[in-house]
Length: 57
Image 1 (tube, rainbow, N blue to C red):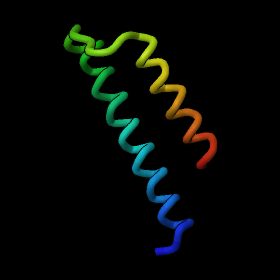
Image 2 (cartoon, rainbow, N blue to C red; image 1 turned 120 degrees about the horizontal axis):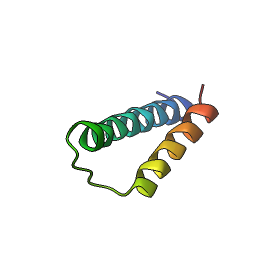
Image 3 (cartoon, rainbow, N blue to C red; image 1 turned 60 degrees about the vertical axis):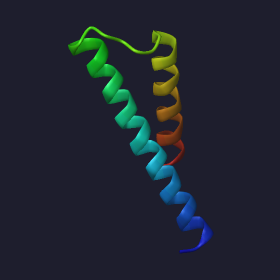
C-alpha cells in the first residue's frame, strides 16, 4: 500500500466513524431523549462530515 492509498483509507475510515458517531447521537437525541452532546457539538460533527465528503467524493 502506498502513501496515497493509505491516506484514502484513513479518510474513508474517518468518514465512517463520523457517520457512526452522528447516527449514535441522533438516536440518543431523537429516540431516547437523552442527548450526550450539545447541539453545537452535533452541528460541528455534521460540518466536519460534509467537509470530508465534499473533498473526497
